[in-house]
Length: 342
Image 1 (spheres, rainbow, N blue to C red):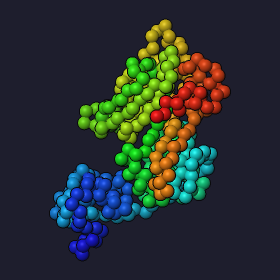
Image 2: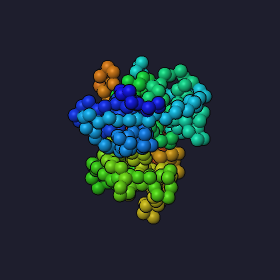
Image 3: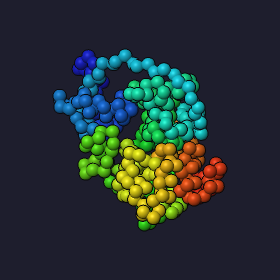
Image 4: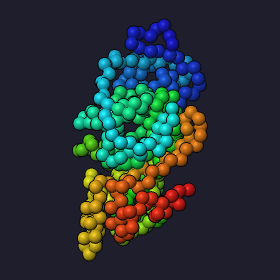
């Protein structure tokens, strides 16, 4: 630090030859999350000689950096809520739960008091403040109507290391997906940039100039009108799987937002079957089925799994024309989903 730091400003001198990207370096120096560092940069609060810097800036040794720290607003309080949660792993550093569909991950408009964070507060689960205001402990997200495995950090150290691991693609995130149509090959990589939709800011779309995004797709089981896919994220963009699958003409079954035709793409002679499949889907048939990562503190390798959820068993049974799947509690194992796990 330097004595020239003005009130509300932190100043420091870069002491290493190649500190890397500014956002990562700033997060490390200030012991904050990468998201918080990026926010400071985006707001023009990180400067050199009075000039705002970009997140991708690379600084030279000896450069003096000034960070204007915004006034801290009084923290919003969140009411504890109660709900059933199923944890597949938990220790003093982190927890991994099988999130049910319909549960918003963090508080926001319309969900200030009934989000996952509220339920965790009601449970008494400690959560890392590094997630940011309203997002304590949140390392990554799942959409409200997507079920499956979600990591929660209980300490700032765990949060920082897990966030870095996700950024460096050292956390394997695998999804089970029912998608319309048939891929020509059993394994496909989808690479297409994703950005916010120009007219509807709540939706994402494939668009030139968007953020780089890669999705790896494997076909597990082929049915008459759809396929069970094993999808692995190469990047983690908002709505990535739903947008990418729709972009290549295989939207997620039950996805009301990115369907782009869905059942209507099926030939007229099979339209009735397809409409029965669509009607049996209460939501998008998308489930975060597996997480594999190294524990951020103990360094133990973890591979955690969550079976196909009960609310999506009817649509799977209808798609497969297999009534047995209605009673099968290990549907993914039954269909060989785990056998395709390399």
